[in-house]
Image: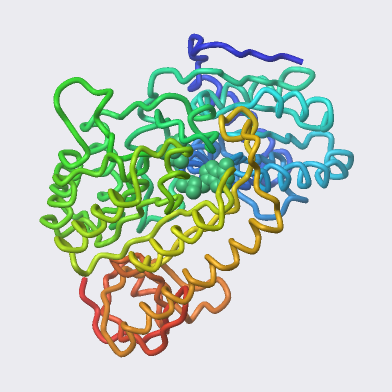
Length: 476
Ligand code: 5AD
Ligand code: SF4
């Protein structure tokens, strides 16, 4: 078994590996009459989804064909998440279930990548418990995947290659896009914030921004291939540019992206409240293409808990930012992330979270039970909250968040909203779906000609998480 754990070594010749695997897959196809198939299962955030798109880009270059059926796959990749313990447990369950497939087909390759693999204790556990895993790599050497796959195909034993530190940003990877209409674009990688509950700074490394011109070039290419909406991704987009030469910030980047001919909508994720500038609020207000939506994680409403979390703002500062945003962009939707049951959270702290949720009236929120992550400062606390207490608080918060969302959504009943049509529903091919600028999901009867168009939809039913309506006008 081989393990490397080092800073960016000389990059293997990825293109050579792509060509060799492509040739061998072509030969396989000629012999058997069908191509080699892959299946990628992605867990976790949009960063991971986008990383999986990059893997898909490589795989399609290597003549692999996508399948949704595990039984017919020649290569199964789990792109893992470790932000909460549940996500890790799920992966272990799935790995156990793959054992019988590997027994049936010894040529099947099982690969693991993503944040979970950046933790040494996880890799050790996988090696000893799941010897049917063939390849393990991490978040920092995704660009090397073809070379790693080639070694896995050619060498005996498992290949394990996890880099402990990020290398240079690798530009120009072949990326296969899941949606032509909406596309993810990384603008930065890593995080320097070290919120005390969070594993991300340890798995994704230090913050580093892509050059403005690289981002612009990628968006231009996407738009010329039919993309209407881009989601700019970073763990903390508000600190974009800090690692770049010159004086460039996130607002400057947004202005450049908005200048691209044909771009219709720009979204971004995630904003950190401590770095959200007035310049950004002004830029959002001024530029039509930037969607009226901001995802601004609150995490907790109590100043004591926020301090323990190392979030760098108080409840009052958070509320002041919200007021500024709402004053400048009254129609904006505000969504958030909230953690319940952080160590030391008392009933009175939790009630402050409820109070902030009521005051802000979030359009929606991702709510999480605090999950202890090995290696993070909060995990070492002596004040962990009992699971049953956490769960009761979680239900109380969820109920409030849903009531507010339902109430807010009712205001849109009989109104007409603009929706970018993404495609048809999986369950019913005659029902189409899309999002408003405020990121609300709207379903309506439609046909394929609407895909990628912006349509005006009259809202006929408003629920907690989505709307039903009918198309009144096709705008573009
Ligand atoms: N426990 C629970 N939730 C967490 N998050 C991050 N780490 C943890 C943890 N240890 C949540 C935060 C973050 C979101 C992506 O995941 O709310 O914003
Ligand atoms: Fe984790 Fe905090 Fe960084 Fe977000 S800002 S990725 S919560 S450390």
